[in-house]
Structures are given as C-alpha cells and as structure tokens.
Image 1 (cartoon, helix red, strand yellow):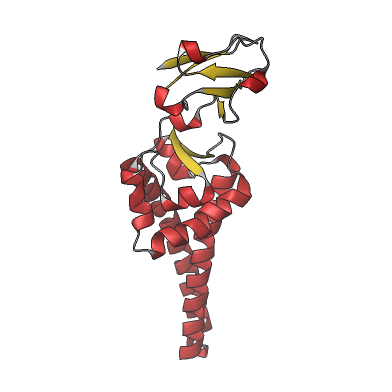
Image 2: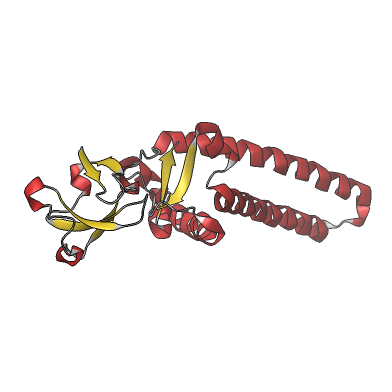
Length: 209
C-alpha cells in the first residue's frame, strides 16, 4: 500500500499501488478538496508548491472507491433471498385478498374475468417488485435484504446512487442482466470489482459496510 498525503491539510490515505497510474497525476483531497501532484515513486512526485499544472491531466481521488471492499456473489445472493421472502409474503397477502374478492363476486366472474384478475395480480406483483427495489436502493442504497447482510449500492465515484440511477440499475440494468440467461448476474462472481452487468450499465459498486 502507498500512503498518499495531502500537503495542504495533512489528510492521508493508503491506496493500492495498482490503483495509481504511472507517472505524475493530480490527486483531489476529499478533506479539503484541494488538488496536488503525486507520483507513484518518490522521485516522480514534484514539489507541491510548484505549479500543479505540471502534473498529468489524469486525476485520481483519495476516496478511492475502487479500493473499497466489494460485496461478492454469495453475499448478494443472500440479500436477494431476504428481499425475495419479503416480497413473497406481501404477494401472498395480496393473492389472498384477490381470492376473497373473487369469492365475494361469486359466479358473476366468468372465465374472461378470472383471466383479467390473474393479469392484474401478475402486473401488480411485477410493479410492486420494481417499486420495492427502486425505492429502497434510491433512498439509501440498501434494500432490507442488503441491510441484513450489511452491503450497499453506491456510484463508482462514491456518491449516493439516487432514484434516477436506481431505476436505471434495478429495472433496465437487471432486465438486460436477466435476459441474457442471467449471465449479467454471474459476472459478479468473476469481475475484479464484483460488478454485475447491471452495475456496469449504471456505473455502480456494491460495497461491504
């Protein structure tokens, strides 16, 4: 690990050497938000009092989200199981309510009416599932399942994901991950940053807390 220290405020952070590009780069301090030049080797690091424009154009952040511990495949499966159980319980309750409605109507519901009720149940269940994931992920980066196993979704720049990106990840991204035979989900097990295809599409990480 390399220790990168801010010459302006003294903030320091250990960063894996492979996360620092070769040569001189501009580093942005997350504490004072000042920038300063830094080189991987001591000889590469210029005097910070010199013109910082002498550093390369590429910038890195001491927040180093790429170095944060990522949530692997199985812990994310565990979170998904918890969320699945919660959604299943809610959908069973809804199914019972719809069944009671159908019984109360009685013989007045023909085959087409029963098919319509089934379609409404299916569509509502799908909408409920999407709303569940988008709301909790957008609100805090954690569904109840993720809270249970202490993992969180963040943007690759370390910021909160927000509702717009949560919708992009949970609905569009996961649709793509699933439609290719689930390969987008399996990517988590083999990717160096534990990103599924939906994470890459939405530029997110799932980190351990």
